[in-house]
Structure formats: C-alpha cells, structure tokens
Image 1 (cartoon, rainbow, N blue to C red):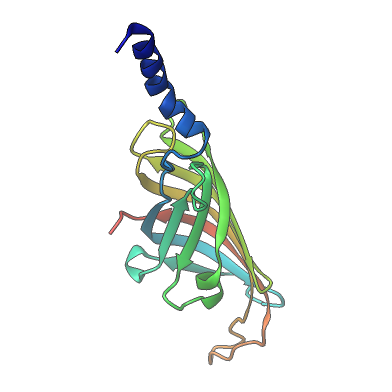
Image 2 (cartoon, one colour):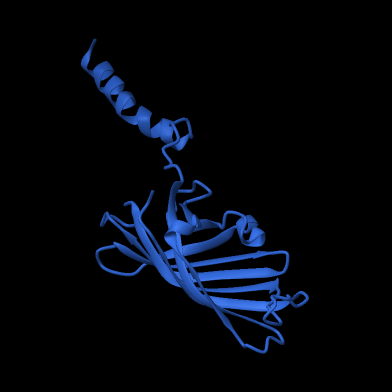
Length: 187
C-alpha cells in the first residue's frame, strides 16, 4: 500500500468510532436505575378533625416489616438526582402501599456523600411528603450505595379515631400525621 492510501485508511479508522457515535449506531451506555430497599423506623403524631384528644402518637419499628424502597434514575436517563420511592406497610395502610413518591436529590456537601432529598406523592386525595437526607458510601456524585435515609414526613389521609374507652371508632374524617423517619440497615 502506498503512503497516501495508508494515511487515508488510518484517518478513516480513527474517525469511524466517532462517526458511529454521532449517527447513533454506538451501543447505548446508559446506566440502569439503582434501587435500594431499607426497613423503615418512624415516630409521629396523628391528629384528626374533631378528635377531643387532639393527637395520638405512634411508633414504627424496623422489625415491623415496613420498608422504604428508593430508585435513583427511574427513567434511565443517567440522572441519579431523579428519585422514585415506595413505602410498603405490609397492608397496614393500603393507600400508602399504592402511592408512588417522586422527587429529587440535591448533593449537599463537598464530598458528595450526602444529598438533600424531597419526595412527594398523591393518591385518591391522600398526600405524603418526605424531606430529609440520603447518605452514600462513595464520594463520586451520588454513584455510591445508598446507606441511610433520615428525614421528616407529613401525611394527609381519611381516617378514624377512638371515641370512647370501649374502642368505638368515629366515622371517616380528615386526618394528618407528621413525624420523623430513619432507615435501618439493608436486609
């Protein structure tokens, strides 16, 4: 092969990968969504319209089997700041079980091991919001494993309250709950 032909062939071989990439023929290298599931612990207060006790407290322990599942980049767009979450109450609160929370993560420290998160969801007139922090084990911009989530929540729902000492329940009324949550260790 003569020298000009070798130069042309080498330029074509160097340019071919870039040309394939620009034409969209290169393989898709997007990352898959990242999903983490944790046992959930929560402490809160619930209050309902016309409840004479004003509020009732509740505690959820990690051993109760309630879980929080967070998926980063649920749309597979290489944006790990997009979040989607679900809470599984094992049938204790069917509306929460069926609700999908959508939100965002905002890296909040120079090591990128902590992100501020916000999650919001609505279903059948019920509303749930979570605001808090997510901690990661890898300092590369949210690429590490999610190790812990802490925060506060606010929930609006239709519920009942106990009217008397015999356990008689009220009719359906508007109720609210708020409190703190923290995830346990991954199973």
